[in-house]
Length: 250
Image (tube, rainbow, N blue to C red; front, side, top):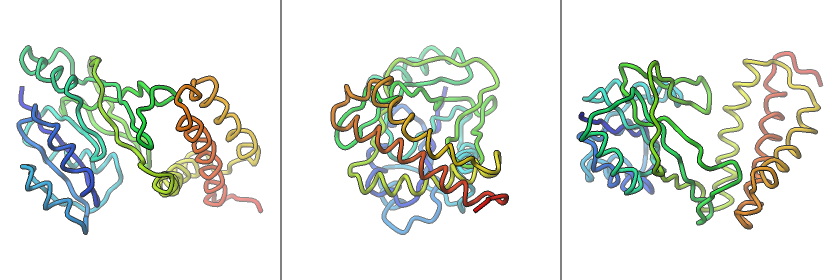
């Protein structure tokens, strides 16, 4: 069983070395870049990756392009701000040794936020399919929150995929601005007009759900911040969607 690791990038010089160094279990590492103007490609090649370039087509489409450019059918798809834990790498080595029993595998994703590993707040275990046979699986999702759809059996790995999220609040705010635009485009295209009550009800409910019911308070000050930012995210998302709707009423 040979594995191609695929990583899509745009200005990821801060992260790219870490993720590549964690992929010792892969026979190929393919970086698909979409016009970085920093040292992403230079660093990726220095660490042994094959670098290809393609204009941006959206998250799911870009990851499918990377999978098709890969040498091998088995794909391990990671984002640049992720890396394999040593325990997860060992599990993948074991699959390579015994042979795959499934067409795709999920893995729990453990996020680091403002320097703290987040174990609650709805952020963990956050299982994702990241190891899959491209003959039986593909990325889906037109705007945001892309995921792998597997036509076949799915197994579940135990060890963590590490996700290095925001190091600062300003970085988180910038991320919210980007992703709420994509999410709003999806809502406007699918649902049309967004009722004003969404802006009144959904943000406070999101805060309560994240901080209380999903035990965000156990994540300390970072958990409180996550709950507030989750509520803020939904408020901005629905606000943008209202203004994007072709049937918007003033």
